[in-house]
Image (tube, rainbow, N blue to C red):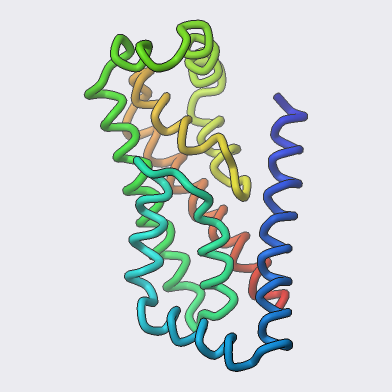
Length: 184
């Protein structure tokens, strides 16, 4: 598992750096295109970021870190952007948690092999909220969205889940914002 965490972190940071370098290249190669991108971020701003991160953290998972890193690179208020991203991501994760409570294991077992489900639940049972915290901080983590669902499936304490989730999201988005801001 340790190797998987390290591999995910390296890939995540690498992809984000590639996205930010590509944005810098666009700024240098085509200032008018860059200005258009800035206008889009300005036009849809925080609401657009909120919607994309909410859906990307819940029922329609996709890598929201690219969107956030891009928006952070163009943002004039990183603290507000981080707050919006944390709220959106947390609400999206709560949708996963609630869906798991509603759907129950029997329904999920129709779509996932029981062995895989047991293995995933074992991870959540063994590491509990620490898995939420650790995997939640990793950039482009393929783990956090399924873990939020599994936390609900294994009926993790809601208070504990929420505390570790919010802590991971704050660290996650602050780290991404710092990386994006330092490159521009």
